[in-house]
Length: 231
Length: 199
Image (tube, rainbow over all chains, first blue to last red; front, side, top):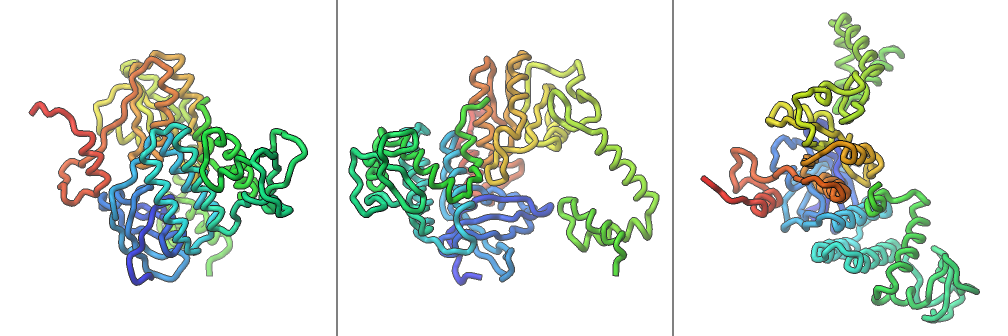
């Protein structure tokens, strides 16, 4: 049990019994963990047990499923509506799938909070949400120690903006002999490191998808299906 | 020490929600020691229900008929359709609200971390329903969680191409609720959704 209440966000809840939920939380200093929220007859707590709400929580017990014993709202929830909400669900799925349980990730927590704040301020257009998502993915991979290599190719040569590269998830960019549907412009790689412009969005998305899919062992992210046009 | 068959029975009870090893053991022992007739009835009905209860072809609620009694009822308004998550929601609304329209049961809500995407909610069927019958109002009565809101938004996006009014159930202060005890999120929603008061 931590000495002080921890800043946290809820990633996911699942019903455990009639009045209890297992809650997957992403905490500032203890990383991602699962806690048990009991005695939820009082409707008050259900209102707080929502995604994208800054919380202070504490728990007790050393088992794999400690009990939540403090739950307080830290600030007003980030209101993500429509497509922006899908983005929030996407971030949650990335954290749930890629971070290890009980692995403290305070830097990633800060990036997550920043991303939610930034998402809340958008109008849901691709132009506004793409840079936020790419930035979060970039920081996620970096904090997990599997960051992208974007300034040098696998032979140690600096990336040339006009060049074309294949990207290997572990070795990084490899100069390509010709442009294909699988290659990336040097300019896109460099922009991912610094600042993305609209002309980079499509390639940057393809690159991130390729790398994330590699680290997700090819098991697809379900939240991506939300962005596809309904049948 | 439980015999293998008794052990299997205890294990089988654990498939029920909220039933742990202790409760399962109590149920198994109760049936064998005190209520074998009740147990037999349970086994019989359970087998029959699992064999015959399916989903209504129109609204996807649970029924042993091809089309449920509610959808067959000529008194119901066929121009209004209420989208809910589970058959339990249909029962709750039927008991509480004076609602006379039809239902559509999604069987869940969009929740990527539970592996539930748009293809799991029978949305093609809802599409067909909107296309083939003259729906004037589509009421989105999914839960007021983030996932429920995402589901409502997803449906409203594709319902926009049909000529129907899309409404969302109101959420806010519960009846008898005192403001100081209500969480910030609920209160913010209630405040944002305030309406003209005619007294």
